[in-house]
Length: 158
Ligand SMILES: [Fe+2]
Ligand SMILES: [Fe+2]
Image (cartoon, rainbow, N blue to C red):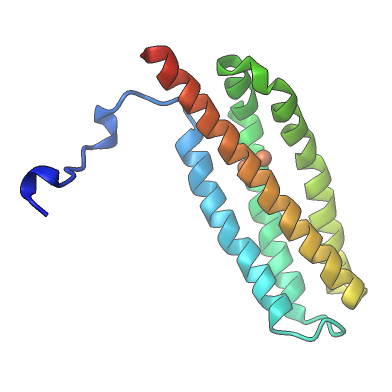
């Protein structure tokens, strides 16, 4: 490749600030969460579903703590309010995501307790898989909203 086709990275502060302001932090936290979801999935893949390993409750405890910190960050920082302010057409989607925080918190706490008590076997494994899918879907839909908001801001600057 000739030199004139090379990309020359610029420091982030030289770019216009994209909205929402906490967007990059949220996207980074979502990458970390995907690793924790994978850690839980790995425990399920590496064990018989009829037997509940101690590692499952430990990984679910990690996920519970990380989700609580992450959801609290999104709520305290006003992520959804910021998104809706920039892109009012996302109001229903943003409200649905905010409402999911409470439901996901309760589900992960209940599943961790079931795993700790070694209750459930295959039913618990399936419930944990549904939780992993729903959390991944939650974060994907947030990523889409954040990126849509950035696109709205960029279009408005044209
Ligand atoms: Fe969220
Ligand atoms: Fe999130």
